[in-house]
Length: 493
Image 1: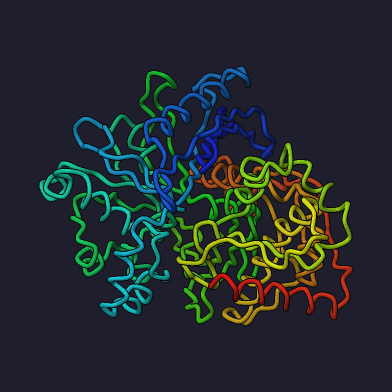
Image 2: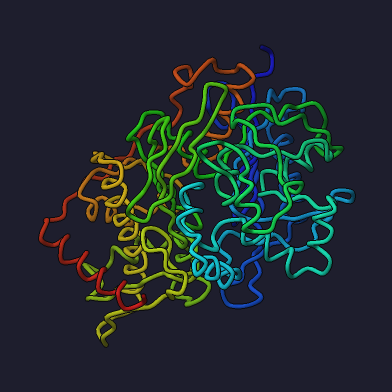
């Protein structure tokens, strides 16, 4: 085919990006625009949904110009998106009725507690594979319908639509012609039955959400309509959609059961491919959908850590201990240890495997000998301790012993952090040369659908040289450090 380029729209919590790949999987051009979060109250996190959309259009136009390409050169568009973030908009005007409520937001915690008191936790987990927590979309939708004047009545009348960010982008890109999501994003709403692969009527009743609001669910590598937008162009098929973490799993080529990756972005998310059958977790992990195509659905186990890159930004913007995120590696390496200091980055509660929405961050073990350098090091180490906790839970649930962990995302460029990660895990950490694994996964899905690549065995090996971090830590040292971390965790729960 003459069109050999795929554009990946990577809409994350911190920024919107467009990366254009060629048939060899090489980056031709990229453009990025930062996105702001607002925090009206403690634990509340939201974004302007219109800004999300406008920024994504802008970066796609810039990426095309930078690559000196026309829309006619693009074979397909793939979308990877921040998950669980919830948008409700008017079906006729396309205007959101409220800001996008971001995945980190905890405003619906009281409602979640009421569902737990009603004894619904097991029912919801059995159907969705998810822990009953404000993290997911359903309670966010309920909050909007309950707190925006007239919203519930308008929803019942069929006037409002719901979507995670992928759905919002698809609806706008197709000029309102397609209201759809994919299986991976649907599986994060707490309204989708991951066994029957349908929106669940009992769950809709529990959260009091009209069925008419929900998008059609389609396979990840599939047909999501064509772009019809004056700022970008018309006729490009949208052919791949996945939540950002599942897209990164696909970009890391974790196609076999037992293969796992950890993405260090705003949060940190570890996923393990478990194959065609869902694995129920008994150790605080999520059972979720990894990806899907016409041949079926592949499942994964997931551990979600709410603060990773955001914790490093806190060192820079909140505490002003560093001037840039990049310098934290050298600062942490300049001291041999943390002098017994631990930082627990529970700014929005604790995710997997603890699931304590009431936990709050703390600096534990302070003495007069602790300096800003030790706090920086302890913050980086805290991310690695949490990944270690998730990995141990994942091995228990899957009964698979991981030999290595594949990593990506912005924080994976931090050499100190990745070396300490290998040390505390006691196994190798592999980082590919290309850091844009989320976008690459979305591009792979779209390219497979339109025939740029025939199947996963035909995908190019474009991740480049792998940087390997090997563990050099003595077992007794590792055990002592982990015991100190567990003591620090106990103090915030």
